[in-house]
Length: 360
Image (cartoon, rainbow, N blue to C red; front, side, top):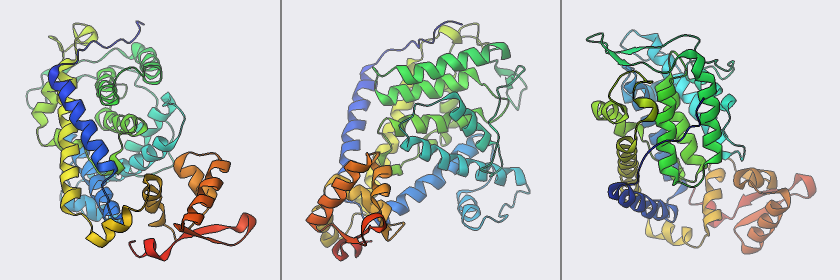
């Protein structure tokens, strides 16, 4: 199996959009967002991601029905399709798993991808067995005409192609993260390693690559809405090569067109959440208090929205610090008056100073 070496060029449009993405990324990083508002924006983005990613695959639940289903865990669909609800629940647990993986320092593995796919098609269960790659051909046809849209690689080539693909993911670090994420999306759907769930898994894998690369944007954006609102544009951009057969053109095709489309969508998503966050900025008093904090202190506020007390172990896991570094940081924060120490020794824990707790 040939080494995976994607062909593309960085056009002026791609370069300019990458610069704009970086500008917005930094702007959101230092935007004083109230933790309560941040939590709301994250939840809104997660619901949008689940709704639009499954809608692309034909799911008929509305965004309101998705929100109600995830809140109540009860049957909410008027379509009579239990399958739709299972897809939503499966995507929800898969996103949670991706968010946990993003916090890990470990490289992305084939088993990670197999587990993401298993969760996607698992109907909402978090106890699933990793999916195995398809053992036969999986021809994608137009549902209206029956014409072949895409014929992916043969089953015998899937495993070596996935091995080479994952190796590329973890070894290539000399291209911008957004471009790398776009290639990951493209190559996964090109290989099409499963009979079903390839698109949803590809989009989750893309999210994982972006989050690991520092483009999580506080978890408040959704790329899937961009794809779903112009579905034909999405399919046109990802359809590369003169033939529907992988071996007759797509294998060695130039994918600049897809990367340009992907980067443009990423920019639009970033702009959207930046504007939304600006519109819902905190009061002047809250902004003044938040601006007294450094970036790490602002980040840890999100942990305090979920629990009143934290430990040095929580700090270490949150920032991926060593236990010693976490202890030193906690001591520094106590001395600054940011947090208050409670208890002694192994029982020691920390709460926010009332000044900051009032914001939450």
